[in-house]
Amino acid sequence: MLTDLGAAALRLLPPETAHRATLRLLRKASPLLPAARADDPRLALTALGMNFPNPIGLAAGFDKDADVPDAMLKFGFGFVECGSVTPRPQAGNPQPRLFRLRADRAVINRMGFNNGGMDAMAAKLARRTKRGIVGINIGANKDSDDRIADYELCFAALAPFASYITANISSPNTPGLRGLQNKDELQKLLETITNARARGRAHMPILLKIAPDVTPDALDDIADVTLASGIEGIIATNTTIARPPWLKSKQAGESGGLSGAPLMTPSTAILKALRQRVGAKLTLVGVGGVASGADAYAKIRAGASLVQLYTALAYSGPGLVARIKRELSACLARDGFATVSEAVGADHR
Image (cartoon, rainbow, N blue to C red; front, top):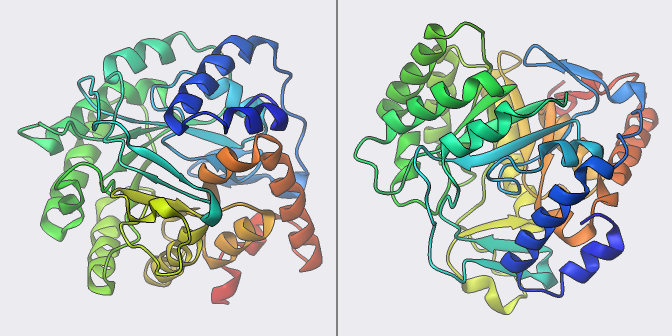
């Protein structure tokens, strides 16, 4: 992970072993890593009330326990999202639960919110002295009797240490979790979280992470409830339970969420449809299948102010971040945009 060559060596290991090894290396190397180079000024933007040096972020799932947010910022990400984290520590689903689909540049995971719990994460973040935008992705324990209360607990514990909070209600690997996307449950969830925010001292941006497998009617409900709730944005999308028939890899039939290249088209379609429903009233974050500057640009033109990636990083190594930013700058220059903000939602104009 520390170099593209090192990333290639790690890919020779089983996926979850490689991931744990990557985190260990990053924890040790973080103090030695140089600060990220200054970005092209045209990539800077203001969103969610914050100034981002660039719109390219690390999606949740890589750094579940907030072990290495500052190391990842040093690789040039404009922001990092840690988690998903639950109130109580959770082992997750039985192994194997992470599968590389090399021929498809994709991954299937059924991790099941494995993490060390909100208290352990809060303790790590409390020791953090570095600057940079770090969001926290929160979820519910699999065996919880009151999942909405779990989100409230995580918000209260972690908001003091976060730049923003994302409520993840779209993981396919916790049975029943996606039911929180239903209109009545979503209203209750967002009311609970915004009430928790109102009891705090600072205005913490709140985002909602949704699935790519929602129907148009369900997307209508999500847009309506979210707009009425007073939260700031939506992340579109999480992994998909769909399996395109053209997948080549032998492990394509494994259960879990599919991410990577096959997710680019469906997730961007949801993003674009969501932008049509909410206009510029919410900040949208595009995630799913981003592996190039052109991919990031497509998300931005579809309506995303910010973009996240993860799976492509596992295949291409950390040099991918700088390459995406160079390619994105070239796309903006080619089409005559002086800033990335000017390109947001361009496909709708």
